[in-house]
Image 1: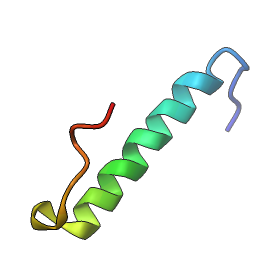
Image 2 (image 1 turned 90 degrees about the vertical axis):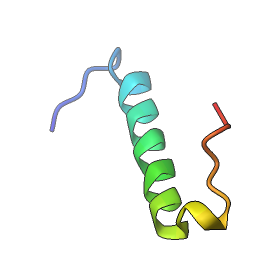
Image 3 (image 1 turned 180 degrees about the horizontal axis):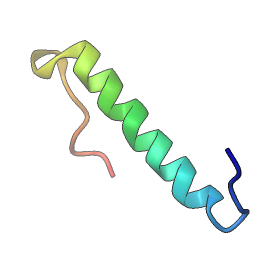
Image 4 (image 1 turned 90 degrees about the horizontal axis):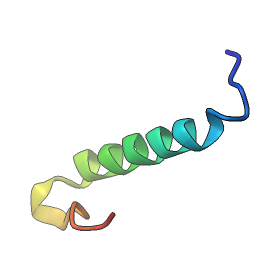
Length: 38
């Protein structure tokens, strides 16, 4: 996997969103998801 330096912020943002979605899925909607955070 080769990522240029200009793509790093974009990739990091994608990873952060995926990680947050993964955590929300683990916790479930009844355990206080953080969908209101940016």
